Length: 211
Image (cartoon, one colour):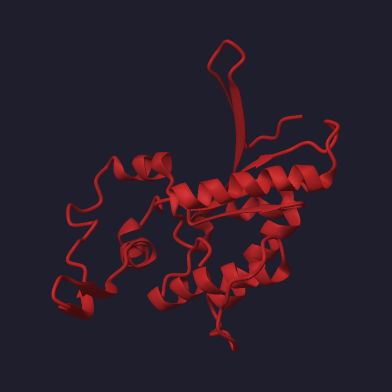
């Protein structure tokens, strides 16, 4: 049964695809409690979008890189490189909002045996850490665990807090689900999703991908 946030694409000759796009406010009610793969995204605000520019710059752009370079004859260089790139140097064009949504660069890609519970926990942790400095440093955690949710929430919440931008409602989630009633067991389903997650993270380099 399709939900109101489901999208289906039929390219003919049996080639069909489907996924859901759920706004931040509806995660608790519209995301199913089923296994699946998900990705977090941010869309450009419809009003006062210019207020989001510092946040988006800190979210997507790396301002500094620590580098070390070696050449022949044992020559070495090291130090800090600062970016002189400004993604918003041409302002906020009329087409940017639609383009930003259509391109939809991922902030994070993950999997879960229970999408609703996992995404709800992500959201709770994000809301907590956008207003609160954590008492512990973040570290990489195993996939589909409470620790992983806290790690993601801490890291993205820190960007909101540092940029003093708190409009989390412009976040949204895309996901696909996998049936457990197609003859496969849970372990087989999750193994399949885990392989897809690894490939997607490797190819698409989400902002908050695993470190």
